[in-house]
Length: 74
Image (cartoon, rainbow, N blue to C red; front, side, top):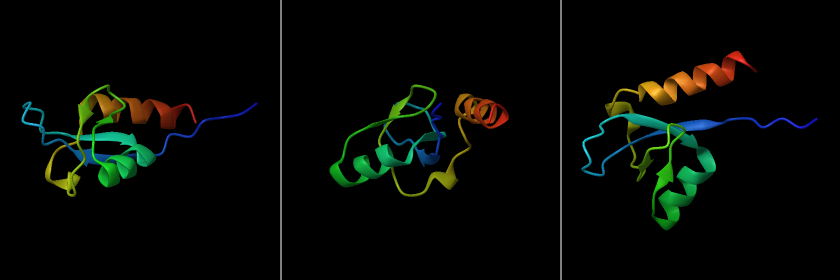
């Protein structure tokens, strides 16, 4: 039986859409988007362009809830 590990990383949103939260997304997607450009899909479904300092914003409540559930179930 194989298991999938969630290895999220936060990145803030600066798309001008009014969502000023740090979102969790897969590290590989954030690295790809940082190098090639483009958007990343957060665990909550929000699409954003990663920027350097996610610590400036509060964590998205839905992303945090999903991470907590994943950690709870192993």
